[in-house]
Every structure is written in C-alpha cells, then in structure tokens.
Image (cartoon, rainbow, N blue to C red; front, side, top):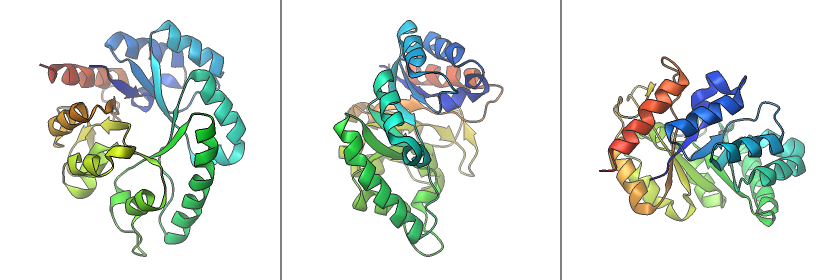
Length: 241
C-alpha cells in the first residue's frame, strides 16, 4: 500500500526547508505528497526534489484567490510539477450569497482546468456539514450545484456529525479521488492516527475497498510534525496485515 501526506502536517519544516521536509517524509515511507504552498520555490525546483526522493504529487491545496489572481500561472506551475488535482482547501461560504459567488467561479474555472488535464476539488472542514445562520447547507450545494471532486476530510466530517465518513464516501464515490485519513477527539482536537476517537480503521478499510488514495493530515505538531507523520504511517502499515 502506498500512502500520501498533506505537507501542512510538517509545516514546522516546510516554510524554511521544503526540500528537507520532502526528503524526510520519503524516508518515512510516504510515496505521495499533497502540497500546501511552495514557499517561493520554482516549479522546476520542486519537481526536481520530488524526482530526487521518489515522490509523486497527489494534489495541492490551492486557494480560490490564487485562481482568481493568476489562473494561467497556476496552471503552468501545476503542469510542470505533474499535478492533476487542484483542491481548494476551504473558503468563506457562510451565506447563500457567498455560496452562489463561489459556485459561479468554480463552475467557470473547472472546464478551463480540465482542458489542461487538471481537476478541481474541494476539501471540507466541519462547518460544511452544518447549516449556516441563513439555513444554507454548504456541502450539499457543492455536491448538487457543481462537478467538483470531493476530498473528504474524514476527521472533520466525524467532528461535525459524530458519524463515520464511510456513508459519505459511498455517496460521492464517483467524485472521490483522495481522502484525508485523520484522527482526533469528538470535541475537535486533532491527534495522530490511532490516538483519537474517530473510526479510522473503518475509513481505512473502505478506502482500500474503493481504491481511494489515503493522504495523512496530522495538524497539531505535537511534539513536532515529523514525529506525528511517523506515528501515522506506522499506524497505516500496521493495518495492512
């Protein structure tokens, strides 16, 4: 089994030493990386580092503002590093008007990206599964009013609903390329895999059954990002037997 890691997990290293972070996650056994910024490094440099350490890019977390400001530049950068999945990591969708504006934009950008072999997706936190103050429902509208890929953050789904993300994985299976496999407590505190209350093993089994790439995101830097990354991949490897 091959696993990925969201590089936000090791953000205590990436801003000052992205190459070192890539080298270390590769040494831990990760095969895929999902970027959360490139910290001024050129696409050619980043691609060279991935090749050097035997890594592939599974996606990037790229904000809508970046697409608004320089769509052509974003496309060129991602094509150079070999990325086919741009995932919006979150956005202010706290009202129906904001949802409408966001949906109009992603529905306009998606076919342009598709022409270049790049898909567009969205990554949830907890609030997308809870009603806004005006009653609008974020995740439902993203599912029904767009063709966005759905990157399920399985812990934040659990935090919002207190339920396993497995039924949600089934619901959006045709638009599910990757999940964040993640753990934490019911009250919103993230933990490395195996140390929280989320139904991680159930999610793991479903992802294997569906052939969906599992990307680790461990956010608390306790005691540091790479230690958490190590705990997480050791947990995943232990589930393989």
